Figure 1: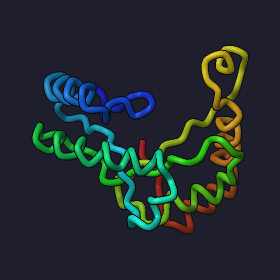
Figure 2: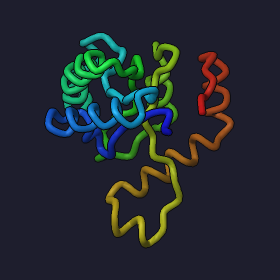
Figure 3: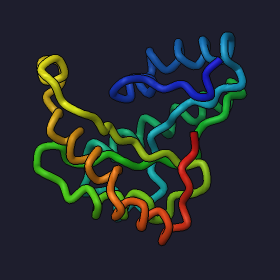
Length: 152
């Protein structure tokens, strides 16, 4: 059975999908936790990021429904950023880890790009940027400085 359940592009947060996902997890994998996408940041840090603010809103309802179903969820989420411009992913990761509680989740999509992926996903270059950073000594140092260990 899975340790956790989520959906591609946060689809599990949408009300109609949410209800089906939570029912299926409760029935088939009741010990799995479900991923919500609410950040653990003050409102002043959230206002300038419309996508993340929308995910916060959807996650508030999702967490309530998960709790009513007796399902666990992650306490906080980070990783949403503006994909329309090249990021300083190291600086972003520092922001993501700041204040992230035990059990918090950071979303990322590292990978290598090939023709097949390019035909399926418009965000391919960002995958390579994320992979390069996550494989770097800078990331290892950031984890150490923030006393963060990666789960499995």
